[in-house]
Each structure stands twice: as structure tokens, then as C-alpha cells.
Image (cartoon, rainbow over all chains, first blue to last red; front, top):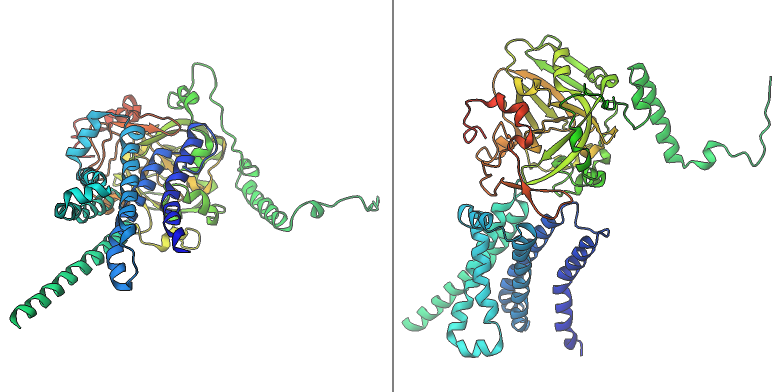
Length: 206
Length: 318
């Protein structure tokens, strides 16, 4: 009975920050009081960037959490990954449209001359094929290659956290926390792989 | 002797004023009393008296009157601040700076000068000769404002302090007090916040020590009760809530140089041609505008200051 509500509730919770932000932007563009400070575009940048990384990390938490708790969580992983893409897309659009308004000279300079932006762009670009292939029929169509492709999530999250760390001006506390969470999530997978191999080796020698 | 009997409907002050505001009013009267002794009648009200730039031709060429129409709204000037002593977010200082007590205030002066000592604010700033200066303010983060400051030329303070010929630079420090500045609990920066100027930069008529903006005393989050304003440099040079002035021989290390010397130099002149390693400085967003505008060399004050840097490689001395 309660199970039926898990998925809709999950969607409401994941979409809530985006809906709030879009509503605040609507207020701002209509010259109404809003919560986006005196520099709404910068606020958008920080807000969408933070939520992208949070959703990337949450997506990477699903598998270890499911294994440790035996909860059946894997069915929610795809939706969470898509929310990471949604916030990444908002972050990218805010940068391209509101912040630089298609000022290609500056954007290209940013991408090629400033490593912080390079890492961010790389993360977002790699996220696009994952989002596109997240439909069920694509999963079937790609077969084993689907899993291979979706391992890019590790590279994407690493790039995103580096981007986050490099963009911060003085206070690196939050990016360092992100990096620590990421390290433990990746560490857990390395540990599992190591164990698997050990078991396999034991079987072979036995 | 007239003895007035009180009618029951006569309200006393206490009846209409809450106790806390009544007490703070008493503090205010007390502070005003001290201020009057110091000769600063302007402290009687939060408004600052300053000479309104006369409409005659003989106006100060540095007052920035032509920027009057571009002034940034006061809510943004008071609500969007970088002042890490009160938190890391732009709206933190406005929320948290109420713990700062800008009155009474004193400034320690030392180093290569004749009139060392501890000065009360009123003895350092001539409140009878305040000027309004409308300046562009360009943050290193590529946003900008136009702010009508009220203050005195820094040169007028320096003259009072009589630096010796060994004084090549002037150095400033912000207050350190975790009770008043709760953000200092975290070591984001090695407190105190530090800044400095070359002596000729400090003496330039554009450089002011501000005590107010928009005709009122500085709000705490804007650096009450006194802060530096150097309009051709990035905003972080404008050190706030100053408690120390030193005249020194060698180039001082500013807080941002200590934090990242490859990104923030001593000069920090606004320069659209020298990028920050992580973003371009070619354009800026004026707060309140939608799109970016080109950044001006020396923030548009080249005529007044470019001679200070003649022959210097501004890519090297950023």
C-alpha cells in the first residue's frame, strides 16, 4: 500500500528544488520580490551546480546502500541519475543563456583556457549520452554496452567535483566534503571488486 | 513653582516605547553625548552631513556626479556583500553583522610616522568636511555597482599622521573579535583581513576613507564605521571596519595574496585585459542589469590614475 507512494514522493522531492528555483526566477523576471539575492544569475549558478553534484553523489550511493541494507533501491537509480542531468542542464543553460547570453568568444575562451570550466563542460557533455540512453528500449538495445557506457558516471562525478573545487574562491569546505563522499563511494566499489577477485581466485585454486 | 498633575490619559514615553528600544535609545543618547564632545554633530542622527556638490563650475572633478543616474539601489548595496567575517554567502553579512559594535571605535596608528597612537574615530575623520563621491565598484568576481559614498580623502588622514620618508606603503587591518565577527570562528582567511596601498596610490585624490553611503552612516555589513574605497581597484582592496593603520617600508602582503598569490596581486587594478586564472575580467554584470557590459580599464578612472603605473608591466603586477 505504502509502496505505491514511494516513487511519486521521490519525484516530488527531487523536483522541488528546481520548481522553487524556476518560480523564483519567474518572480525576478517579473520584477517581484524574490529570494535570489541582488545577483540572481550567480545564485542560479551556485544553486543548480550544488544540486547537480548532490544528485550525482546520491545516484552513486544507491548501489552500495542497496547492497548494505538489502533494500530494493536499484529501480530508483535511473530516475535519480536523470535528476542529476536535469540540474546539470539547468546549470549549463543558466551559464550559456542568462550569464553569457551566447557570447561565444568568452564561452570558448572559458572552455579552452580555464581548466575549471573545462572539467565542468566535460562532465556535462559526458552526461548527455547517459541521459539519452536511459530509456528502457535503449537499455535493451545496447545490451552489455549499456553498462559499459554508464560506467562513465564515475568519470563524470570526478570531473564535477574537481570543477566544484576549482570554482570556489576561498571556502573549500563543501567541495572537500563532496570529494570525501565521492572517495568513499568509489573506495567501496574498489573494495567489492577486490573481494570478488579474491573469491574467484580461491575457487580457481581450490 | 508649577506642579503639573498627571492625567491618567497622559502617556509617558515608557508607555509607548518598548523597553528594549527605550534602552537602546538611551545608549544612542549616550553615544551622541560623546560624539558632541568630539565635535561631530552628525552622529546625532544616522544621517551624515556632507557638502552637497555645488552646481557651480568649481566642483570637485572626483565627485563622480555624472554617475548619479546609475546608482545601485540601496537594498542591493546593503544586502549583497562579501564580508567573510560575517559569513560566506552574499546575504550573510546583512543577516549577521548586527553583532558588530561600531561605536565607540578607535584606530591604532603605527610605523613610520610622527603621530603614532590610538585615535578615536572622530579624531581621525573630520566629520565637518565629509564629501560625497559616487564611484563605480568592480568586484573581482565580475559584478559591479555604483555607490554614493560619504567620506574624506585618505590623503587628509595621512597628512594628519605625518608619515616619514621611510613610509613607502600604507597597511590596514580589520577588527579581529569572534564575538563581534562570528565568521572569524572559521579560519577561511588568516585573520585579520589585511590590505595595503603604495603611498602615491593612497595619496591619490580618488582614494577615500568612507564612513557612509547614500547620505547615511555605513551599515555594519558595508564596513562600519570606516572603510577604504579605491575605485580603480577590485573591490577586495576596500578593507572594512579598519582598526589599524601602519606606515611601512616594504610592500605588505594582503589577505588575498596570502590565500592565492597567483590569482590576486598587490595592485589588483581593474583591468579587462588581464584575466583571473579562472574567469575572464573583460566584462562585468552591473547589479540590476541583465546582460554584461565591458569592463573599463582602471574601472574608468584611467585619466586620474594611469600615471601611477607608467612603465609597469600590468600583466606582471596584476
